[in-house]
Amino acid sequence: MLATTLLLIVAALVPGTSSARPDTKAVFSPVSFDVIDRPQPVLASDGRFHLVYEVQAVNQSALTVSITRIQGRAQGGTIGKAVAGTSLSEITRLGNGTTGSSTLGAGEGAIFFLDTSYSKKRRTPKAISHAITMSWPDPVNIGQTSKQTVITASSKVSQRKAIEVASPLRGNNWVAGSSCCAFNPHRNALTIDGRIRIPERFAIDFVRMNPEDRLFDGLIGDLGSYDFFGDRIHSATAGKVVRVEDGLPERTPGILPTDSTIQNAGGNYVVVRISKGRYAFYAHLKTRSVRVNVGEKVKVGEVLGLLGNTGNTVGPHLHFHIMDSASPLQSNGLPFTFRSFTGQGFVTDVDTLIAGGDPAINGRLSGSHRGQIPMNDQVVSFGR
Image 1 (cartoon, rainbow, N blue to C red):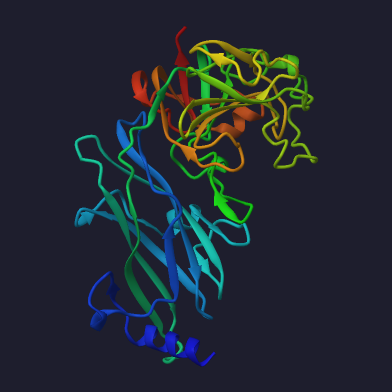
Image 2: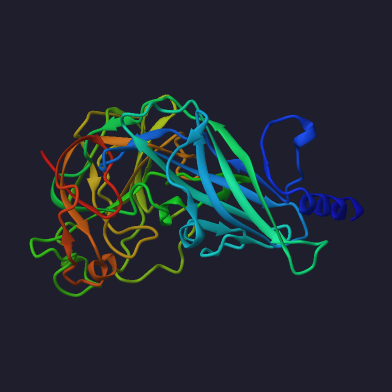
């Protein structure tokens, strides 16, 4: 306890900016920061490269510490926009699972879900670090606040190019739900077997609007109301089928299942090994619709199964992502791009769409896209 008290007092008395520098200028910090996985760039439909990654923080002190600003740094300067205030709170998940605050209690942890983007004209950095500002009540001068900025959370940046794949779907009016690069349900971290995993870091949930720009026509709980239920799912790559699940029942749309587990969350699915360290995951397929078996080789465009509503889902959709192992749980999500698609705009009110209404569609980023990943809630068309 004495050592902890001394640490806090020194930290309060020696605010400032710290990094890997001479010991004479080093300072104690109440919070530690680490990048969870090495970032890998992906080109998104906004024409910018995005580094999508997470920083884990642990409050090592007995004080309440507020993280107030995070600024990416690379090659001696800044990269991307600084995140502060409400914007920072919105991308923070505390150790108790809550979001909306970037204040860490004594001994508490948090994960910051970052998206650092940069122009195509800029060379991908070899490494990234962060200027992180925090503040806490001064334990010596009661009523005052100590503030400190540290240069920390350093990581090499992968120079590996994101894999380019064909579309697993055909036709227009597909909405890329919870896609790159915002903090969304897909980016939630899981602790699997004692290790943090983020298998769905770049995942997309595809749903299709009908010609009236509605998700369904009829009763929300009737699978027949969804025109795209039963659509063919095509292999986005060549490869070898390594995992299949095909016996789980359909769920009732509009209702979140209460019996979901991490084992059955993906519903019926297919995993295809593309190459070493790269696997494609197709989830929530229709019951008894899978057309391939483990061990079979598949070609680009081959039908794997039909779009369904199995597993942990509130409505028919295709969940698609690329991961670094054959396990949908014990893996990390990898970036990918589609060879081509046509942007049709963005859904501006997802809640209205899910409820069966006619949401407004803006025309942002409309037109042809090649070698890019659709952005969150972008409406896209895939050719045949």
